[in-house]
Structures are given as structure tokens and as C-alpha cells.
Image (cartoon, rainbow, N blue to C red):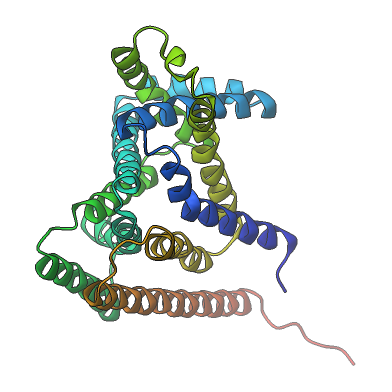
Length: 321
């Protein structure tokens, strides 16, 4: 039976991916603004939103102390700078893809992201893969090659999204920083660049530019919440539900993006797209099922070892009639 914590975790994780899946609609509303400017506002307002969260939840002192701790550790600081740079590249690429009618490529990128993360784990963390999992990686690679050859263009948007988020995830795994503080610190590190860009674009008071279009200014401000809320929900879900379930939930967002690209934004979806996406779906399904089976087998083995150790450590007591 699923306990209340797991139900809340499932709801939080699902909500995070649903919000991520609908983000193309949000960024489409801002397509009249250059992607660099949207990114700058997204960075600034996400930092402001996180600071408000810390104030409301009384976590400001914890955030400040973790910032001080990072400054004293050069390796940790370098890791956070790299994470901030990678997530900024990922955000910019995604915003650019939506503004330039490349939602299908964005969807493709987030479909192949889990497999890129797997390869990074093998290369950098020396993780082992089963043969069937290698088959999944090869199958997805073939799909990308088919798209590249048949369409005559390298899917640069998809690969950039997948690799940048994969590397970001790798750094987050290696660098020991709490989830919410990490999001705020990453934003803090690039806020000066974002502010400098806006000043360069509009002068010392960039808000004046939006006074004639308050709807746009409001959307830019809310982009902070649109960025931070799914990340917070995701961290809540990740702590409360099994990794296998989280693995299935992560395909909600790219599937929604795919449907939006085809049916709402009328992007071209050829037979080649369908064949390539089908290969990737098969690869992801095979990989996910193999991981679930492997995890269950390990769990059963660990339980068996625990029971054996328990019975060997406690001699059988004589039962008196």
C-alpha cells in the first residue's frame, strides 16, 4: 500500500513534469522578446523568487552559511560556476527553440537526455551497464544519426539540451549542495551578467522599456516562479518516490512538448521524425524496464542476505512446551 509520503511525492513529481511540459506555451507568449533578454529576466526573477521563499520559510541563514562555505572551498565554487553556466546554456537553448519553432527538437533533446546521463555516468563515475542497456544507447544513437542524415541538418538544439542538462546533472551529483540552495546560488552567480546585459540593452532603468506593455513585464517577472516552482516540486518528489517511478515520470514533459509542437504549433513532423522518435521510445522503454528489473533483483538479493545474516547471528531458541 502506498503511504501518504509516497502519494505526495508522486503528485509533486508529476506536477513538476507537467509544468515543464507546458513551458513552451509560456515562452511562446514572450517570443517577441529576444531570447537573451528573456533569459536575463528568467535568471534575475528566479533568484528573487528563491530569496522570497527563503524569507518565508526562514531559511535565509542556512542559505547564507552555505554560500560562505562554498566561497571557502575552491573546488566546490568551480563546480557551482560550471553548473550555473550549463543551466544557463540549457535555459537559453530551450527559450530559443520555442521562439524559433523548434519545439520538436526540444522534445527530442529531453527524450535522449536520460541516455546521455547514462553515458556520462559510465565515463565519469565508472558505472556499469547491462548489455540490454548498451543496446538502448546504441538504438537512440542510430535514431539521431537517421535524423541528421535524412533531414540534412545536425539536431544541434536537441543535442545541446541533452548534453547541457546531462552535464548539469552530473555536476549536481558530484557537488554536495542542498537542492534549493543550489538553485539560488546558481542564479546568484549569473545575476551580475544578466543585469549587465539588461543595462547594456536598455540603460540604467530597463523597466521603463516595458511600461507600455505591462503584460510582457508581468510575464517576465513570473518567469522566476515558472523556473523555480517545478524545481522545488521535483526535489520534493525525488526524495519521496523510488527512482524507477521518477524515471517513468520524466517522459511526461518531452511527450507534452512533442504534442504541442505537432498539434498546437503545426511544426513539420515527417515519417523520418516518426521513425526516429519510435526508435528512441523503444530505447527508453527497454532501458527503463531493464533498470527496474535490475533494481528489484538487487533488492531481493539484499533482503535475502539480510535474512541470512540475521538467522546466522541469532541461534535458534529452544521452545518449551
